[in-house]
Length: 407
Image 1 (tube, rainbow, N blue to C red):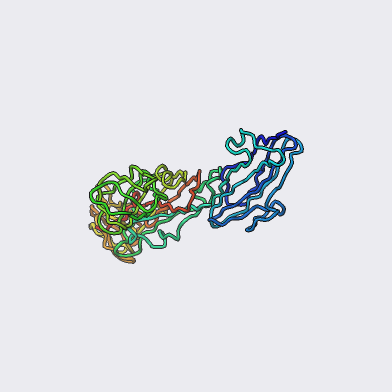
Image 2: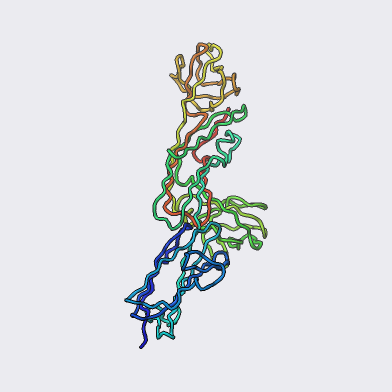
């Protein structure tokens, strides 16, 4: 009389890279006989599960197979311990064999096309790190250490975790600091608050085949590219505007972009995606961004020499003062428009020119509004899903911080 294996159950959802234990349960007729073995494939390196010591062996031996297991009641259950991985993702294949010489078959509902062998796979994925930076295209206006890629925060997690990871200002802040030079020490102006679209992801890719005046071309890889990303740079030749990706053909690795371009074969393109939606399409990460920016401290200066009915005010150092700033303090006459018109820069001396004549005493303390030496950025980043690969995300500060000028 034929006995049947009626169900095979194991959680096949992706696993994180830490050690995992999952239960294999096989139900069937009393006396049904089956065998099981489990194979790991990690970067084409094969291992087999050892059911005795719950480790993984490179060579197949008796302990790597549960042989001729007979169902005593209605089911059999066994835990399988999947090892931690570190360098490459892994795929596990579970093989369950009904043993025909013990008159056992797999029920059609279990395996419609094969009454002897059932297989299923489980993927184990590596943790990925999201690295957060600030970035400026006006590096000469900043103290290098305040915007360098050493000033970052990393968050590591798995694509399979379900908890939301929140990175908040108490965990990290950025403090871009104005350069301490006569050429660029004219303060920083906070023009608006940061938005989600100030956050960007960048990826480079190589053109596979020259094109001329067309909007479709092949690339070497589609990894971390998504619809909505823009081309913002080329390694050689020229770029007309900032075209964005409108379509991706994954079979041919062909991109369609929003405007015609001429590219040489082999040149490297820099792609940029801004905002949560585009970053998700490119990387698979689901991340929500917000941030608050503010001046770190009130900028103050001291009158160096007495001023008598003049628009020129000498100071004990001008660094941090920007054209367009306003000045207040004891003795300052602001009854009419009175913004700073120009700065003669110096670290200890120097002067500013305002719109209205002033009479001030040497040593008077002045308060400068509308600029500062340091801006504090307090980001709140919520990671709902980590990407499959490590990625770097940049808060592009040029959109909301403007380096001041002297004239």
